[in-house]
Amino acid sequence: MKYKRILLKLSGESLMGDKQYGIDNERVRQYAEDIKAVHSEGLEIAIVIGGGNIFRGLSAEKSGMDRAQADYMGMLATVINSMALQDALEKVGLKTRLLTAIKMEQICEPFIRRRAVRHLEKGRVVIFGAGTGNPYFTTDSAAALRAIEIKADVVLKGTRVDGIYTADPEKDPTATKYNKISFKEVYDKGLNVMDMTAFTLCEENELPIIVFDMNKTGNFMKIAKGEEIGTLVKG
Image (cartoon, rainbow, N blue to C red; front, side, top):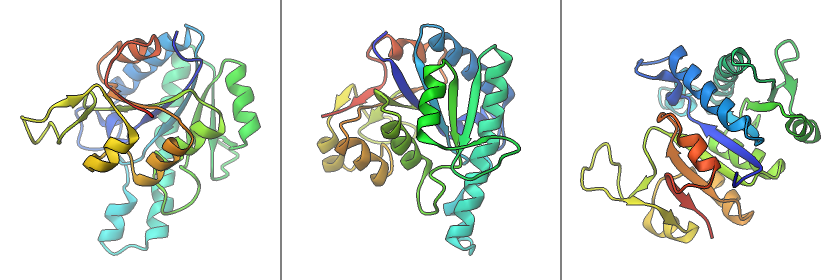
């Protein structure tokens, strides 16, 4: 396997499957099976999930809600998604730990870096919930931050598209895909990979990012083995 420790970033929307909102149990089950397959090869896996399928802080702010209040609500949505994935992972036989940036002792552990690393070393899949615990930061930023803290080898961003394109492939049929691209090229071309805070954190800490289609069964394993799936951002 190419990597030893990875951080997998999933969007909240990816958990919807074909639904308009909420959680598609079949999609979550598929993710759990893919994660189990990779974990069985000896990789240490940490996961960050967004909350956009339940609540989006930015959308609520536009409708008049206080931004900080809306962002905290979004953090709670990520915990709901994290609990759903945790349940699916345990149903396929994996040992897991959910660590959150907001204390919720009845359902999870508080995030402590050394404890998170120890869980990974013991073979547990670690899920990080509630973003960074601060408003005005996205779950992309949380993924970048946690990946750096636990010294992950790579951030894998699982999306609905199979990489980074010159334009949105769902809107522009002429868009072409990049197999590899540098951080500087992403800046220069104004491509939307992650929010700027997350992207800058990865660049400054020389942490590569791979954007790929998580919905296609087997893609996660191919990336873990080093196959050129999706788009690699580095250097």
